[in-house]
Amino acid sequence: MGESVYRGDLPMPWFLLIPSFVLLALGAMTCVYYSVVRARVTRTMRTLPTLRDGLELPEPEGGWPSVCIVVPAHNEELHIEGHAESLLLQSYPGDLRLVWALDRCTDQTRAKLEAVIAAAPPEAPQSEIVEITDCPDDWAGKVHAVHSGVTRSEGAQGAERLLFADADTWFESGAVRAGVALQDHRDLDMLSLLCTLTHSRGFELRAQPAAGLELVRQFPLDRVNDPSKGLRFANGQFMLFTREAYDRVGGHEAVKDALLEDLQFARLLRHQSNDMTLGVLMADLVVRCRMYETWDEFRRGWKRIYTEAAHRKVRDLRRHAWRLRFTGTVLPLIPLPVGGWGLGVLLVAKDVPLGAALVLTGLFGRVMFLSAMGLVYAMQHAPRGAVRWYPMGAWRIGSIMLEAAKDLREGTPTQWGGRAYKREAM
Image 1: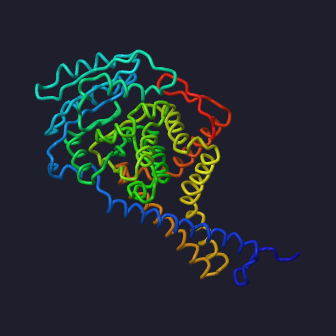
Image 2: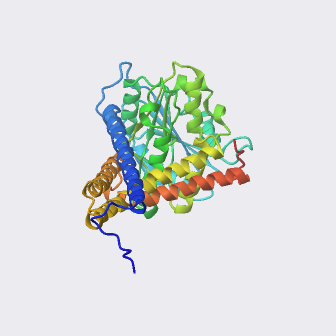
Image 3: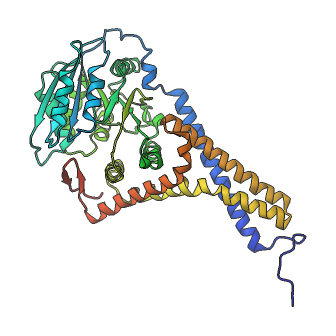
């Protein structure tokens, strides 16, 4: 009977060479991709300031402008106390007023908010509550609430700056001062922040960094902050407008049916006039946010975000999903079989050059992935140890985008803020 076992002193047969070179190519792809990610993140960290840098900036030349913060809230009893306390303790040197627009609340949001306001120190900013009992059919709920807060409150009248924030955010005491100083320093018509998200829940650790990174990959900060690129993005958790810019784009009435009014505002700012400037920077813990309490809320919320970010284009959602699954799940895991196969080539096939190339490629690919994602997680102030969950998180975020594409294709309404919104696929 003939010998069928491969001997290491013979040339490698094609059925071993082909998978070797395929794995080598995929391993090299991991090295290149995550080297680029690391370089882009490093450049962003070096060239763009964060809100924390704004704490060190001096008073604007014209003095501190008056600011009104308008916060929409729909059934926010879990967050409203800590949020309100953080705003009432702001150390802003100029005139600061607070307006909460309570949108059809059916829980204890108002009672808890009133208790916090009543316990505030005498030097706290002047506060006002606007109650909204219904929403017109042609308005999105949040947008109508903010519009009501601006138009029905005394605090917003005559304010030189309007800051729109969400009720699940927490502000360090110098946050408003830093935001105004940074806006003036960079001569921006609107400053938006990527708030630092919490990472205390399981789904936050496993999936949230991947969700945030995917959004920033679609809207890279270096390009968003470069007026010549024309890329438009903003985050509704923190949008600080000059009054002139807000009125010039038409206020919230101009985006009344938008489920992501922040993206619409960003597009309007760039579309209206080339001399209007928009900046999007990292909050760097100065403003923090817990976006969702449960995985189901997380899934529904990010479906809405990705749907609107993709302009409701099914093809783009599917393309983003499969690209993320390949770059975020396949490429990070590839170095392991690449290195293992390389060891097999060294020990069994005795092919030192090819085996060494596979082992080194696998090792370098793993190092570049961990290094690049370590920087990404540091920017997000997420635990470094959670990087190990990134491939799984990327796969699940891909599933959310595919589900969003399916909903669009089948005409499934978007459920948000107590209402259902029918969104037509583009």
